[in-house]
Amino acid sequence: MKTKILIPALSILLFAGCQDFLDIRPEGTVPSAGMDYSKSENVFLPVSAAYAKMRTANTHAFPYIGAFEITSDNADKGSSPEDNPTMKQLDDLNYDSGNGLINELWVGYFDVVSGANHAIDQMPLFEEALLNADAKKYTRQCAGEAKFIRAYAYFNLTRLFGRVPLIETTLTAEELASKQQESTANLYNFIEKDLQEAIAVLPESYTKEWAGRVNKYSAMALKAKVHLYQNEWDSVASLTDKIMASNRYDLLPDFRSVFSIDGENSKESLFEIQSSTLGKSTGETTFLEYGYVQGPRGNSPGNMQGWGFCTPSNNLINFFATRGETVRATTTLLYRGTKTPEGDSIKAACTNPVYNGKVYTPSQSNLWNYNGYGFDHNVRILRYSDVLLMFAEAKAHGATTGNTSGFNATTAVNKVRERARLLPLGSPTLQDIWNERRAELAMEEDRFFDLVRTGQATTALSGKGFNPAKHNLFPIPAQQMQLNTNLTQNPNYN
Image 1: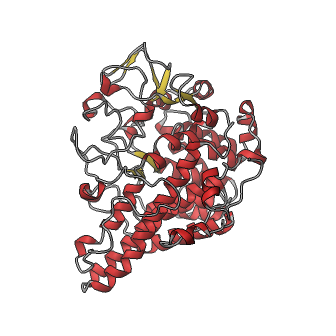
Image 2: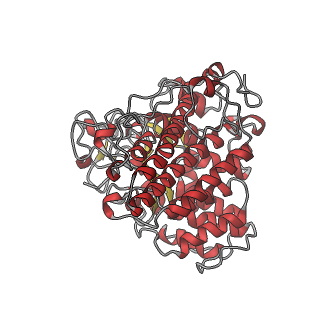
């Protein structure tokens, strides 16, 4: 069983959840009263709790796949036609401020911010109480991890809503209710500052028992992606080039293995949301239901089925076919009526014709006492192939920085294509690079915002009635506007 950065004693409260934006007590944390700041073994506890907040249903399960992938041309709602009209609204781009899944994302990511703020606030107390110089340095490293977590949460909030309140520390309910939204530019500046400070203190790597913790290169990759969304091409090229030049990362030879349980936290991974049953069939709920909600609906036995949401669209299937994709298509598309290489049957009686193969987990791994499909499946957030393709896009846009790794736009794209057993491109265009991103990152919750940021959404999502004056952002949830009357709605939403 793989090692995870999970602290079982803290994770018992993991799914207690906050019910609204104003409920800010961090889940799974040891209350500040009674914390012994003189013990170095306690330093990581608040950071561990911040990591745990990214493992909730609100942040990286059902609403996440809805807003980040089902809205795109890669995926359909899936499940049965009548199941979950709220998700159907996302699929049809027919949502408004009352959509509950959008509200859950707001609550979930602000809860991550709350947990990160709590951890950041605790670190100076540890640093003051600890006497050993290395222990004091470790508190600053842990603060860097928490700043990465906060930056990641704000990156998703900014992409989703454009303008949200900026909360840098623990506040009272009254203080929260008076917060106004920051501009998108200010939010991105804040995210970049958090990540730059994280890069300065995070280590380059961890020992095996700490696999999954973010490091210096994780922060560089996320910061590169933040710059990508602002068309700051020299910054993108510089950061991705440093990652590539480090020689710490590479593509796994086999694309399918990237999404296996054994392939988690591999040399291709820069950031994953950790999920595990800890090898148990009952006990602490340290798992995430990201894979489960996408598992084959109506399959048997019970540990080989899920809710069946977020199914690959015919558009994506045809896209793979026209490109001559075999390697990536075979991994991404899990068809009913077939048997996996591991020997599991996806029965012909399943509700949907095809499912997300990137979250497939073999029956031998699904040991939880009820179903348990995909409970040990990590969510891949930043992969090395994404770094290569961000670098290629920046160079194609004319970036002059980032020249130490030996890569150029062509060689970076072709490294990704080589693993997919596709012929190399002579001089890739921007559209070539965007298409490569789609093929490589399909069903990984990247496509919708890629379409928006590159200006392709109006055409690609014309069948859904995409309107950039409206759909480039999601509505501020009505429930949050009731809690904080200083919030203003995004354009063209009720």
